[in-house]
Amino acid sequence: MFRGNHPAKVDEKGRLKLPSAFRQLMDGANVTQFYITSTDGAKAEVWPLDVWEKQEARLMEASTMDEAVAKFLDQTSYYGQQVEIDSQSRVVLPQILREKARLDAEVVVLGRIDHLEVHNQAQFEQKLEASALTAEDRKSVAAILKVKNP
Image 1: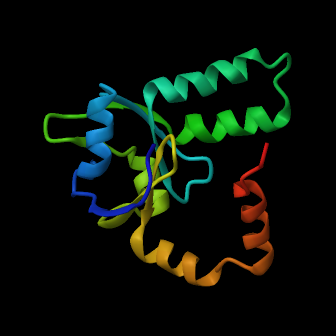
Image 2: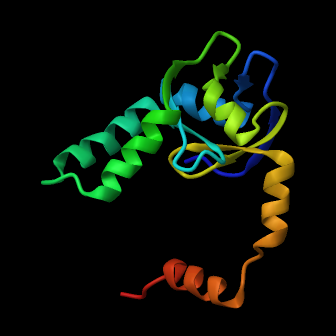
C-alpha cells in the first residue's frame, strides 16, 4: 500500500528519484517496471506495471468499449509510457506529461494505495487550499470508513 506525501525533485533530464519509503515497498514486491500516465494531464500516475496490466485486463473483459472507456484509453495512451527503474531508483517521466503538468522541479509524490501520483508542488498546494474538505465530504468518507458490526 502506497500512502503519504514524499516531496521530491525532477531533474533536468526528466528523471524522478522514487522516494525511499515507496522504493522499499517496490523492492519488496520486486517491481522494476512501471506504466507512467495521466487521466487529465495535470499529474503523473506511476503504476507498477503488473497493477496497470490488471486494469487493462478488466477493460478488455468489458463486452463493449463505451465512449468513457475510449476516452480513458485516449488519455492514458497519449500521456503514457512504460519505463524501467534505473540503478539509482529513478524513472523518466514522459516529456509530454512533464510539460503539460509542469513536473520540472519540486514535486510531491503521493501514495494512492495501489499507485503513486506526482504533482507540481506549488500547484498542488494551491489546489489543497482551494478545495478543503467540506462537512458533506467528511460525512461521505465517514460512511465509507464506518466499521460494520456483525
